[in-house]
Length: 90
Length: 271
Image (spheres, one colour):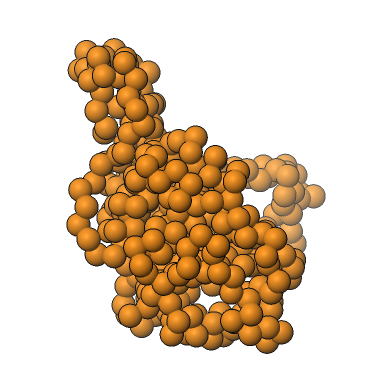
């Protein structure tokens, strides 16, 4: 039986399922009842930037990568060169 | 004292209605007075699985709106004298179900029955939240599959925060019921094991229902699986689960269909 289990362990997908679930659920549980952090950060960052620059919504890319201990938020904003994209100061 | 039990899951298609019918029939067979209540407004199906689809006159919403009395809407099972069904309505207006209306009906049912089993719709919308709202206990039906386990976790969070019990600082007693389990596949590492699921969800186990063709056969003919093939593996598993709900201690096992020769030679055990 153990030999069989060993032979099968190479293509066993259940341990992967288990690990993915554990990471995902520990994250989701920590956010339960909290405001959507990613959403809040994205909106506030974009609000600050758009105070100075005219933003094209299609040129803003937000990515989130969740890890076991840390997560990263990547905000990629394409800024136009020259003066036409800048907002008037004041 | 009457107990309100919600059968819920978040995810659709995992076996909530099958479970409601099977547990309801099993409890009724043990002499308990049981009503199964369909909360899936707009998509009722418990009547069909119970074989009472042609006897529905009034429904839950008629009672909430005062169009019919509770006693007029309750349908008595033809096989078991102490099993009753309160069907959902086919109306598309889900707002017809109100918190207050459901509360009133549940209170009235508490005076008449030992068990009020609420069959929750899938999802986390109004129907699902109202089905669990007044529950004393919850059966969370989970398949050994990632999306089902994730949704169960979400539902557990709701049971701990959105129910009347939770708001009073008490706890809904929660049980995991694993359905469609295939112990051979789990032992080969192809399917999450019972231990994996229980560790992730950190909730006690009520029972393990093996994958079986008897479940589909029972719904085809409109009879709860515990009545349709009483000695089959899923029926025995549901009967054990029902006994645990009544407070009995029953050894946990995966009831097996007849083992194949290969399984026996290789000595595969239930996980």
